[in-house]
Image (cartoon, rainbow, N blue to C red):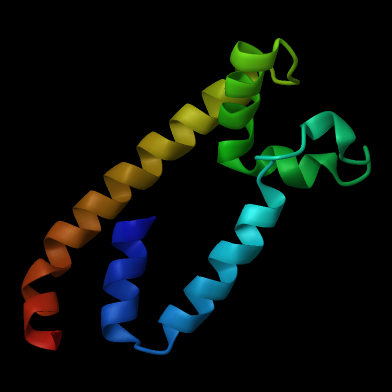
Length: 103
């Protein structure tokens, strides 16, 4: 995601402020401090859609012996990360020449 936002903020300067705010809001949805089990069931899906959620739950399970994750969530996170990485690198390589002109 960093490469994607790098290209977009180079082209649209004000987008950096929105990305900064979005990153802060995204961190509140990522269960770093709190476990997913504390999230009310009605909005738990919103937290579980976050690809980082399952990864933090795996670390919580490994370190504390408690965590709520499934193999499907780990598979979703892995596939999401790989797909976004491939798209970002491909797009960044195509836009690299234009980024030099913008900067």
